[in-house]
Length: 472
Image (tube, rainbow, N blue to C red; front, top):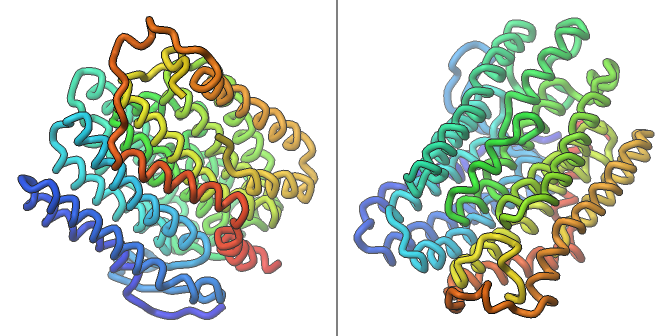
């Protein structure tokens, strides 16, 4: 595997962070402020896209900033998995920024400059996680993301928002400090390094009991993945504006959680170690419980955003399940589902926001007469991965959860398009959603459809990563 040194990963991280200054300075000139946002997004995407040819050829891009301790450095490394995640995040940031303009202006939201500033910081932190070369660097940007998204979750600044914000920090910061930080210290004392490796760096460093303990700490410590029972922060965070919900569910926060768990499974422990200790079974059954329970709870939610939130909880664990299968096809399916779910779910949140801006309706029961499907190919790879790993019970989980997906989405479609309008439900006037809401929605929906027929780029990036890990 070839390695080249380039400052591009650092520039990709800094692009939106540097833009925060002109965004704040342009606070009284909204058009100029949003111009800086789009400029940073386009530059970030361009830098990331320029690295794709090298990554597809199996080359890894690295850059070191500073060594903190022997074996611990702030260092960046771009591989197939990191590129897949960064490409999705940078693409959807542009779409979400456009959507935010229509949504925030359409509702005349306050503190829009603060909103766009923290949005930019959050995307810098996301790319920092995507390109982290070690657990230490990943942890720093993970925490940066937690702090940057708190003001977005509490944007409305009412009592409900503050309560949700406290819960958000308790779960996200509490688990990372209480679980991940001690796990990192133990890992460093065992191995003398925190650098991600294709087969991990913990092999032969401790007993099965200690490895199991570390795995539990890291799986639950990265609570942004919303693995049950550390999931309730996600529905609570739906108090935020819809573009923030889209950021939480599709672009940054939750994807950073599952991405971190992928790095733990593949770069800290390694597939060989987990297979030898039979710990993959623990991972996939934990994910299966979250998939089924999350899908069942989604059925009972009347609030559209809350139903989407529990859907996200279930869908995230598809990624964990796929990688936890420790089989090449399962891992490809899990990694590719990051992209498949991102584009599908952000489209659904854009729909929810457009409905709210136009009608003021938040609940499914109110949507009578006001008139989608995600990631089939990635789920097909999960099925193949289950067979490859000889995990037949997981086939039942995948089939059942897919039926539940249809069960909690079809009532929304039915009420919106096939029920006659009831005048009592339309006491508020229905107006057109602003173009800046509709256009990004159409774009992300169009991209989602394209991915159903031409998902090869994302699958190829996932395949490059899996080949490096497994040698297959």
